[in-house]
Length: 197
Image 1 (cartoon, rainbow, N blue to C red):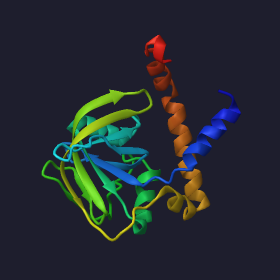
Image 2: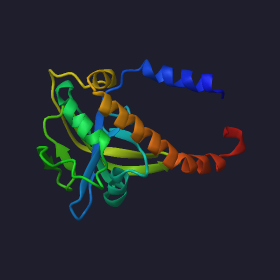
Image 3: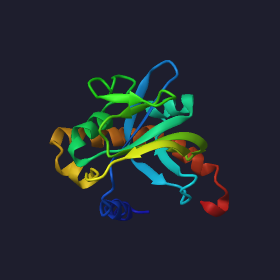
Image 4: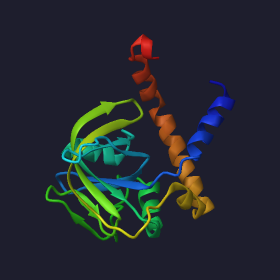
């Protein structure tokens, strides 16, 4: 693909105004973390057996936590929680406690639930797929809650309200992730059957 094609690829996804999700987890020794996830989706239409799938970069602290305990909580945040989005988007949980000053409770299994979100889904991991630069986790929804009357925070709203410094930090973090994970993605691609490359 030439550079023009790559540029247009990015433009296509800018047409979509995705909701902002925060995914959290915690270790058995009490460390906790979370991030703004780039990929959260319903993975089952069976209301009796709801499943969610999330995509997490394997170099992130949250992936380490999910690996350790086999669970996560996906939070749909509201438009009035924009500061929360930036808190969970810009720094690593290895270096800072993202929950410092953030009201939260814990599930029965010790996973952190950020208070005041529109909805949250506690998930137990039932499957994982390693796609090189993303680990995809399928999780049975074991508990959840939701409210009405508030709108989810969307990407366009988040970016429109961002400072130049926030946008620069986000772009730098995304570029660093891409460079860090490129060899893992290449390794994954090299193992694919020839018919799917």
